[in-house]
Length: 122
Image (tube, rainbow, N blue to C red; front, side, top):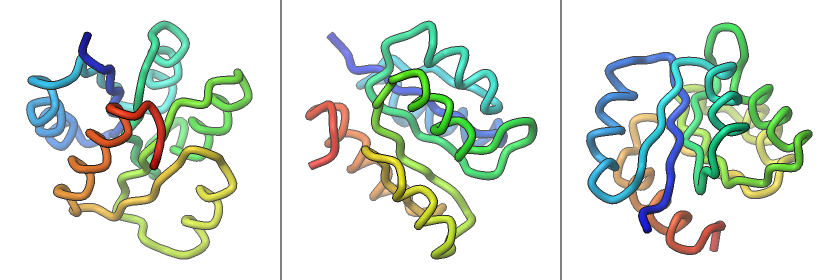
């Protein structure tokens, strides 16, 4: 059975490109904002989340905070253009998370495959 991947980002072109990249290997779900992402996380068994940080309505930290509050410990890869230490430290407070700066696509692909194969970070 294919692993499941959720992509949460407010950039439609990036979401579509990532979906195209991963859809041969995984069942890919997409959300254009954090609220939609949480709905999918509550309805589906997701193996890995690729999540932007800065989004309207609900940012990435709010998404992971609510996800963990509901007892879901799915691995999160924060894939964002906001590359700063304060953000990295906030994200590091949550278990099973990884921070990758856009546009580091090769590392994103590699880490996503590793996480879904192992169902966690190495």
